[in-house]
Length: 339
Image (cartoon, rainbow, N blue to C red; front, side):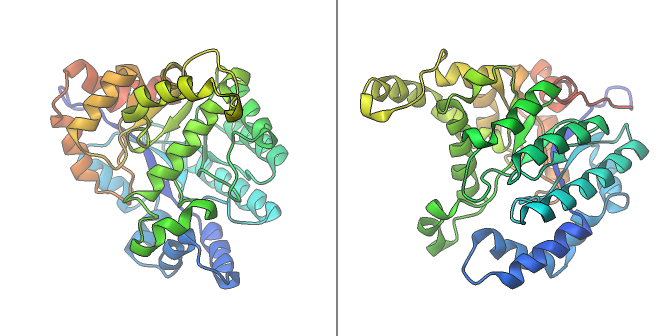
């Protein structure tokens, strides 16, 4: 590292495997109805610069990192991971992807770290794969929001959360398009994607973990949300107020919580800046969540690396906060170690 240069760790960076793309092509060929996730995947399986960037690990990716001054990337299989496959296929593709990622990280331990992919639709197998992948040296688990229109707040998925908490690694909940129960209202203007739908879907998932009592059962579970917290930090006051007010109505039937939603969010969540290179929400997150709970990310290759790196170097925040966001929090939360 050049003396005086700000180290930067990017914590939401995507890759794909040939097996994932091949299986997604089968899903697309078998589909008969509109699916917002497949709308984008149809472009991905057709090839092109974006797909090439996802498949590339040791070529342009490293050159782009070097040119932008990115020290490390935290890699995860691109959304929707293996969550649109049948359970057997998901288990196989996840294991192969985790093996590939762990081997790549082992070759470049000071430049890359990784998050495991798990077959959420088979909870017991997912828990075992989380344990195996972390044993290979991966730094956490990524799940791409809902699976078959269901959320991790449902007890059937709690074996996965139990395993992740026991491993002492974070769970990164990454966006995908809204579930079928939500998607129709977004379709006319194609708002299902990053323009609005991703945040609405993933923010709902994060909130359901809180209101569903997940952290009463798993108080040490650490969850990471990208994109400045998928809108939740902005709404914390109103969430607390309405949770208290309407929680007194017996017909709501919500779980009783030992902490307010905002207290739980500050204790159990961290956020990344992925895809939001803008000072106002960064300062909001630092103020609302504390400097210890915000990390830098690019969202490569879906966002431009140089823009994000230049922004965090010049953002209007204190130098202490800049260091925490740029690399210190990632080292602490994900256990990443620069060269």
